[in-house]
Image 1 (cartoon, rainbow, N blue to C red):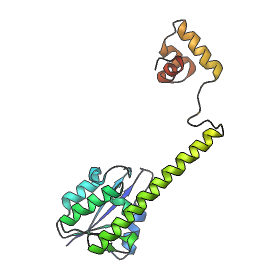
Image 2: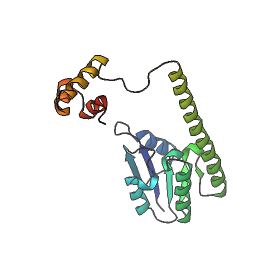
Image 3: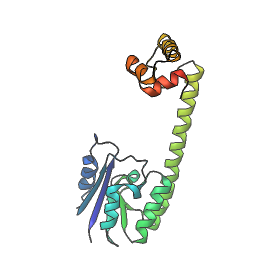
Length: 189
């Protein structure tokens, strides 16, 4: 039976080589390697091109190895669905991060549920901390978001020129900003 390995990195600038090395250094001889590069972790596993290809090639009873649990899905629900689909095909799933634990076994399923719950709680706490920090910054008078490309004087000038019939495109070229920015300043968007 063949051993498959899967890696994923979020941007084209990153490399999955570290994941490959982790798997090789664990003494696992991989027969087939699949990598999605430049694919966000927010993309469901079943929607990733190379993961789809892996699922089409791997046969029932074979083994899938990943370096980390988050390679298998975007959230607890996605990871769980991926593991269940693989378990139905009797595909052993090994996550090195968990010490070569087979997630399709009874103990593996228990561990997966606990880890998924902890990971979800961590994400929720991160969102809460981020929202709290943003609220604190707003209360302190900090202006959030991207800095404006125009000054108050330029915005007044844009409004006056637009009232005088100057086109949005001409204003965009004159001030070196997008048409959408001009329309936001003039209230047309």
